[in-house]
Length: 336
Image 1 (cartoon, helix red, strand yellow):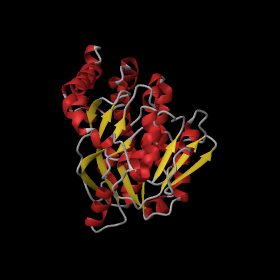
Image 2 (image 1 turned 120 degrees about the vertical axis):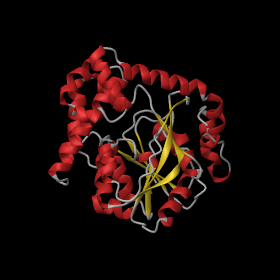
Image 3 (image 1 turned 60 degrees about the vertical axis):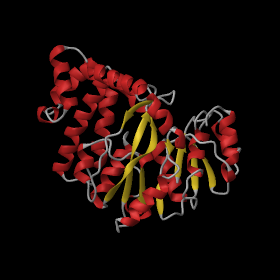
Image 4 (image 1 turned 60 degrees about the horizontal axis):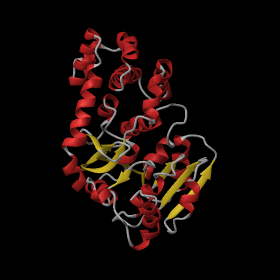
């Protein structure tokens, strides 16, 4: 298991506890500290567990950190957990059961997730995608099927692709597009991951600058040009423009969305409710997609609070046994 971290002193121990507390115990956890200058490394050094290895490198980005971790790993299957996300205790066991049940070990397995904010309040539920087999077309047309923290891959996938690309902004999406073109993927069929969505996240901050955000979307297209067919690249570019426009609107960047609107294929906006709200936003000058997001998140955050309080307990345990040192340290920081 590979866990990249940068400036993660406030959350990394909880993520480590999430891995070491798995019901599937035969694992190794490689944490790659990507040049943190806060107290991340000091906190990691307090964890005493033979399954944990901590690597420290100069800051070169999350793709390089994941690649280094994978190169040092020894397991048949590889999984990734970002330092601000959490796994259900049965995430690995259920993912591996799915991989072996479907009889195609050289594959990817993915879970659904719960999205939370900075205060651990539920704000969204991932779409329950259940596509399986060669899902290349589905991944090309959807952003949320596979995320690093929700996905387990066979080692053959990594060895075939050579890791995450370091020349594009959305390195995880580029990796999974390539992977799903060559290998089958299967859903676990459960929500087994807590995924953090915050206003200060990397994907949100980049939306402030139109040119930077557009360059980030195009970087994934340029990165995949050598390995995809021209028609596949054309499809990818059209959908990346649509995804970017939706993100501009969802995070209250209406002027940026208006600027991008002429580059988005009208047929793509007619496919779903987000597209319909995007078109109405252009016509009315009111960011309806942003307003819809605020309403949905508010209803989810407060209306589902009693349900979420019960459901979240396995993700935030106070661990015992061999994980006690992690739990004690994290609990002392108010994290577990």
